[in-house]
Length: 325
Ligand SMILES: Cc1cc2nc3c(=O)[nH]c(=O)nc-3n(C[C@H](O)[C@H](O)[C@H](O)COP(=O)(O)O)c2cc1C
Image (cartoon, rainbow, N blue to C red; front, side, top):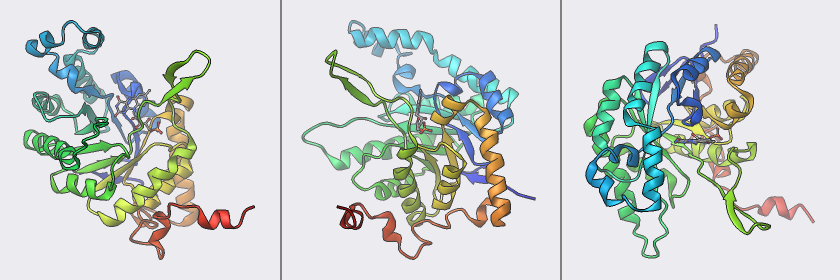
């Protein structure tokens, strides 16, 4: 009997496949479809800290006249905070799998109380999608880290459900950053978020949106850092995310040390059916390789368990190009 259950950030999932935060997970009925298709958990579409704080009149008046305020106003109208709590409650009422709420934030501020409401609504965990683009020429590394630390500390003081931090790749030292998150209370990390990709249309001379969906080739960084972080910080749960498109990608991430796998682009492209197809293939692979539980091979090829961990640190193509004209 094959057991594909996994422990992720203190939650027990029936399998490691999580539908990642996106428009896919904004409605309870669709979440139920993912449960039926076999998903181990879902992460709800993020609620933005601005949405939460726009509930406050003072903030509302401050930014009332700008174009950005108009945009946010429309967005807030369409995405009421209370609706978010309703999505949690309804999803919990009809689903048995864990429902992970997601908050997009970049400062520890008024919105933090909302984390408590998310917990009361029944969310099984909170994923904090923390990101701010720092282009300041007088960049202050410590201040930047302090933002993450303040957020995680305050949310952990506010809730007792697991708190997971979803990060991008733009840190000088990713393991050091995750270590900092861990010692300040993070129960898990998602490696990595994939952000809006700008592109330029040279015909219209406009800045346009690049590919919304990831490609298979985006997997490499996910694997590298999952393997390094799981080797160096074994007691933090990792959900691998970005570039995971088929069952082999999932197996690779588990071998690299992920406890769970988040998928978005592949589900947008192929529909919920891909979840059960992937699960079937993983079980077949486990059968063939005679693994009967994920723990038998999870992290087997991470930084701590291979003979040449520097394979994950190799950054230059010297060897490759020395053999080519
Ligand atoms: C249309 C779309 C909407 C997304 N919305 C969110 C969001 O609200 N919050 C979030 O944390 N990530 C969001 N993401 C990022 C995904 O959760 C995920 O991290 C990213 O797409 C990489 O995974 P993938 O390669 O499986 O697509 C979104 C991605 C897409 C394509």
